[in-house]
Image (cartoon, rainbow, N blue to C red):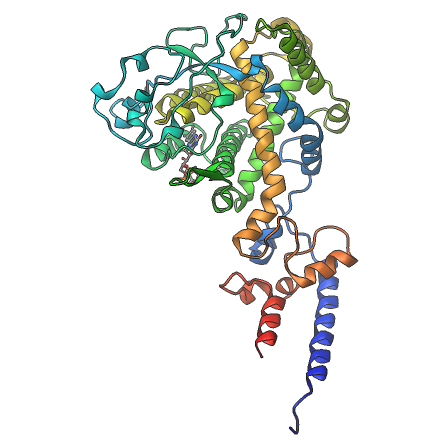
Length: 495
Ligand SMILES: Cc1cc2nc3c(=O)[nH]c(=O)nc-3n(C[C@H](O)[C@H](O)[C@H](O)COP(=O)(O)OP(=O)(O)OC[C@H]3O[C@@H](n4cnc5c(N)ncnc54)[C@H](O)[C@@H]3O)c2cc1C
């Protein structure tokens, strides 16, 4: 037909045009400003690069960068911590599980000690609930509203351990020296994961934490110390959500557990500040652990099992004095620059009170397993705060620092939880986001053909799709076919 191009010519034109565009994109990309951590350039949200957002540079307020944290976590911290928390010393946690909410005594949720949302009459509670117990009976599940995953398994190896010094923590609400109503829980039997606890009760706790005790920043009035409190809580919140998403009840009927990418994306990955706060909290707690190294090295890890206890001590030392950690991130967070100025002591008291309130709020958590991990992790944070801020100077630490066994257990288990979350965010971040958009089937495969070409020619991560960079997000297809080249390809194939 006159004027009609042959398929070969048509292909030649298409390929030529694409190569020209590709070169143009490569040039603009090299000269264009880098996308910030927030995924913004010139203060405009950049939708097209959302899925390739990269965390780089120093973690805010810390002395270590994202890449180093990821590298150290992968090579040193995560493997050591995973082993450490399995040892007898670190796997039993003493906790008061009976909730005794001081803030809203009439909240029906909290009378139901083991329930997430059901309202059972008082007489349905087994009497043994009110006392420390050693094992979970089937009766205990009456109030679980079909959610046995929310109950704590109290099965315990009776060879627990001998006590340490009994000192109270000024940062937390529970009197750790009070053994009444305390029970020991094997943490290995009770992983932090999805429990079905959601809705107004859970929301009320988070709202109370954020609105009354650590207001969200940025806010002009907030000083650095207050921002730090907010970031610690937000980082912990991120970590809890990540564990929920990482170990989720995907299908109740078949009891299928697995990763919920959508939840991870919706709650964490699409909020860079939540990811950043997670890294911050990790470094903050890591700094507390390394600051207390002398103390932790000589602590008694005695559970009556000499072989296991020696292993525990050796693992602790390996972690504290790891040469890679010391070389790459010797000071994860610098606490010395805080509480300066005249108002320092007053401010410290104020923040201590706020943190104690947060700690007390854990007694209002209406799901037992969530309460267990909430209390453990808040005690872990309180212990980090105590190490960093309740003792003046590294030189006095050896003499003045007194930790309870339970505080050390909470501290290390918290560090392990944060380490798991950082690892998951690092590994899953991009793939979960891309999977949400229906672009990839494998975690790292670049789905867009231009990304593949990009990877061949350039070092470093490819932009999400070079054509998108050029044209902006207006070309986004609602079908998840976000790469324009894919769409051109699809329409050519249809012809
Ligand atoms: C102490 C505690 C422990 C819990 N443990 C578990 C558990 O082990 N398993 C389980 O299944 N459920 C647990 N929950 C419930 C869980 O955290 C959620 O509340 C629930 O899954 C409902 O989630 P959501 O989507 O409504 O948002 P939520 O996670 O409840 O968040 C509420 C609001 O807080 C803000 N927000 C969310 N994340 C952040 C962040 N990282 N930084 C700053 N702001 C943020 C957002 O505005 C959000 O809408 C726990 C709750 C609490 C209070």
